[in-house]
Amino acid sequence: MNTTGLLVFDGLLLISIVSLAWSALASPDARRSVILFMAFGLVLAVAWGRLLAPDVALAEAAIGAGLSGALLLVAVGEQSNRALQDNALRVSERNALRVRATLQWVITILCVALAATLAWALVHALDRATNERLAQVVSENLAASGVSNPVTAILLNFRAYDTLLELAVLLTAVLGILALGTARPDYQRTGPVFDGLARWLVPVLILTAGYLLWVGAHAPGGAFQAGATLAAAAVVLRLAGERSIGLPQAGALRVILAAGVGMFLVIGLTLLLLGRPFLGYPPAWAGSLILLIESAAMLAIAATLVLAFLGGRPPAIAVNEENNRC
Amino acid sequence: MTELVSSLMIVAGIGFYLAGSIGLLRLPDLYSRLHALTKADNLGLGLLAAGLALHSQDLLMALKLLLVWLAVLAASAASAHLIARHAHRQEAGS
Image (cartoon, rainbow over all chains, first blue to last red; front, side):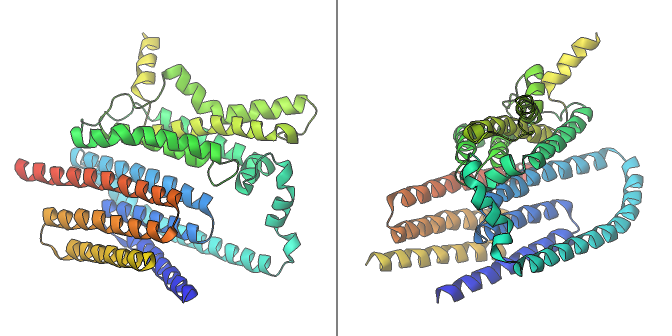
């Protein structure tokens, strides 16, 4: 009875994922697509939970459904604002439609290729002996990694290179955002009801981010989930019409944006000087070094996501540069 | 006995969700749809959380479920207010 019940649940989950994805893609109205995409992200997070991958579920819910959804909604709102002001945009929109048709085919082919590769990898992995699987190797070496959560061990120790490069990608993205110009103007104040919600939600979100960062060492959590939660607190403040949303002044903000990559490099290079391989932590220190890197990475990720939501340089930096020019 | 009570609560909670979903689909305008959705979801989730807490027989789990319910209560009340106020202002403006 129990297994049949779960089977029915999984079936429903599968059907809703596919149908939500399809209706998000097929909907002609961009705003509707975005809202369907957010619902898709939430159901996908439940699916990751069912696959016993709570780390991925947390990341999907916080980044995939929450923050990406907020970013896309802002983008859609901005686009319709501009379309009203600007007739010239109509022409570029017509051109965009032509590009889109070609792009759709390219993306479809790439997605099919990706799905085929994943299916091939799965089939290939299934007929290997168990001791050859990567998970086996990871759990055998977990004791030397400094943390007891295998996901954190992979991200920050065994494959720390990948995470360093991921943070470098984020840094490149935020440089692009800073080059876009000044941030959009603040929202209007929303009134007492939303303010009341924000007043207790923001501290709870900050607390949750700290908890996720700390707990990442031995349970699902870590810098990415914590950073996204911290960024969500800033998004709530901005939506409430708050002017200061927790971003520091220009100089400190630049330091924080570079902190993720910076901390990685400082620790990696120091280890090189001490005669160890790059990012090859000594086992006795591994736990503390990982926490140090994750704290810096959390701040960098949160600041990057907040700047993405602002869509440009925050007023603090913009004012600073005006003064330099004079 | 607790098993029976918790099952009854969960079934009642699902009933509220069902009523809320039907209301969302069938009611004529935005305000009544919001009314159906928020009332039903709040009570439905409350009953579900209470039923599950009773089922788990674990104080820590019960407190976590209570926290989930309170967070959803606050979020859904605030978002329902924002949606309704936006619609009301648009009507008043046009």
